[in-house]
Structures are given as structure tokens and as C-alpha cells.
Length: 415
Image 1 (cartoon, rainbow, N blue to C red):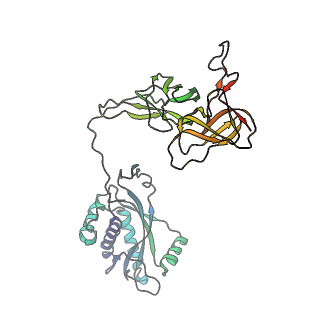
Image 2: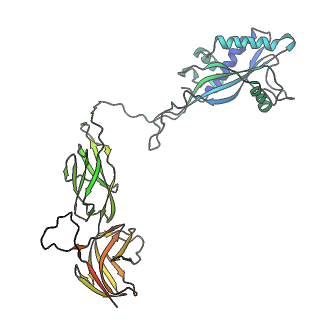
């Protein structure tokens, strides 16, 4: 690769190459590298010779997408940034038209550019040595040589180039493209230490898949059964809501079981299976390789009526009184909570921002509440506490059968 002096090095090397060629063609001819002068002004171009002017730079089509990702996730460099560009030059020819000097010089330049269409490393080194401000250039060490090819500019393109860019009277000119110049950044990447030993382990690509959860409505302390495919691995962890993962209690290829952690908040929760692979290196933890799909379940809060006291049976209070519930797990400050009396919702009293989790909740029964007996439920982030089912006198009900009715908890509202 080359540094920021590469463009100037190409221009000066090309100028010296053409200067040596035209001096032997027409006596007194020379090569310069300045901007063509505007009409009515004196420029630095020769009165006899050739002038080359870099008028455009374009990205190189072959190299522009070969630059690897340069930075890691933390922003550090993984490889040195590289810019690949093409250089577009305009050669203009000066001299006495009566003696066809511009055309003689043009013929010589075309001959040289066709016979030697690239800049050799020795030419570049000689140029760098002869020009002090190019002493730090390393273009000669670039992997790709800079090659030149003629550009077929149309009459319209030449007209715009002279009338708009240079605003000068047209003189005999041709265009060439130099490709490719690779400019590398000065920043050095942080190279990792070399690999001392390679240990390769081949495993089938089998992503774990969760297909079912039982029960789908849980309470704190319940055992959650996860059913699916490809659940067994060297190290299996179960993550709830993206938090720290925990190992399951039992493991098979189709089933995992885990006791719900006590600190899991009530509401609609998410579960995911994380698998790690041990590469038998003897150091470090197994590497996380596979993650399953995410499946949701409801963690229902457990409630008890504490004021007035009573659980299960009907509790009586008047409209306008305060109903106090104990709840597990405790309610976090930002959780959405409401009391359900049958289908009627009662909001929770305002909480102080930043307060600790609450295991006692107070609800004020509206004064206009209709008298009657109501089932009490608590809804937290979309998950509702469960009612107590009626007992089956014949004991014929299975755990999957729907209950035939409920016994509580209840509250009776009076005026």
C-alpha cells in the first residue's frame, strides 16, 4: 500500500517520464504539471511542450468493495483503511502550429504511453529521490503498479472540460486514466496474539427450537416445562427476559424443566434456551453458539385479601372503603397494576416515583360502586391472578380440564 503522497508521486513520475521524451523530440520542449491558464492570463504551462493536469479522481470499481470491515464492535481498528482511486489526466500540447510542434509532441507522447503504459518501481524511486517533498512516499512498494490507458472523450466532454473547468481557449489535448492508486491510513490496527494451538470441533448446526410451554400460566415457584427440538447441548442455560441465564433442572433433547426464580416479576415474561459448546481447550467458559426462539408465558401474581381479613370466602366492605391486598412477587414501581372486581377495573393509588417494590397494595372502592358480591383478581402487566376453582366431589377432574366454577377470592360491596 502507499501513503497520502501517492497521488503527487504518480503525477511527478509521469511528468519526468514525458519531460525526458519530449526533450529529444523538439528542441526546447519540456513537460509541466500545472493548471491550464484561463483566457487572458499567463499560466505556468510551457510555450513549447506538454502539460499534464489531474482534473478528476474516481473510486476504482474493482477495489472499492474489497476493503474488509475496518472496525470491531468496540470501535477499535481490525484492519488498516484503504482508499482505491483512479486518476484522470488531461495532456495538453503547445508549440508553433505552423511547424506542427504540438502534433509532433503529441505523437511522441502517445508512442511513449502506449509502449510503456505503467510506471515502474525504479522510475518511482528515482522520482522520490530527486524531489525532496516526496521523500516519504512509498508508492514504489504498492502491490499494484499504476497503469495508464487513453480515455475516449467526446467532443461534448472536451467542450465542457475547457469552457467550464478551465475557461480557456482550447488547445490540442488527450486524456488518460491512471489505475489503481491504493492509499492506506496511518492508523495501525490492534493485532491479536498469534494462535498457539488450534483445536477444531465439528458439530451439527442444530438450533434449539421451543415449541410449547407448560403451564402457560404460572405462579412463583412453579416448575416450567419447555418442550421442543434439539434442546440438549454441552452447556444449556435458560434466560428469562434476556437476563442472566440459569441451568435447567432436567435436560433431554425434547424437554427441559426449570423452577421459576423467585425474583421474576409478575406479567408476560419471555423465555429462551441458550446453548454453549465446550471446545475442550481447558480454559475459559464454553462459548455461546446457539439461541432458540423466544416464547412468552404469563407469570400470575398470587394475592390474599388482608384488609378486611379473609381469603377464599366473601369479605364485606362498604363503597368508599380501602381494600388491601398482599401480593407475591412484589410489584415493581413501573409495572402496570389494576384491581378487577368481576369485569370492573379499579386503579391502584398513585405510587411515589422510584419507590421500592410493594408487596401490599391498596385500592379505594369508588363511592358509586354497585352493591354486590365480586370475584377479586389482580392484573399485573397483562397477567391476572388465578381464582380458586371449586372442588370436584367425584375427583374426576384432571389438571387440564377447565374448572366448573370458582370459590374466591370474593368481596361483598355494601352501601
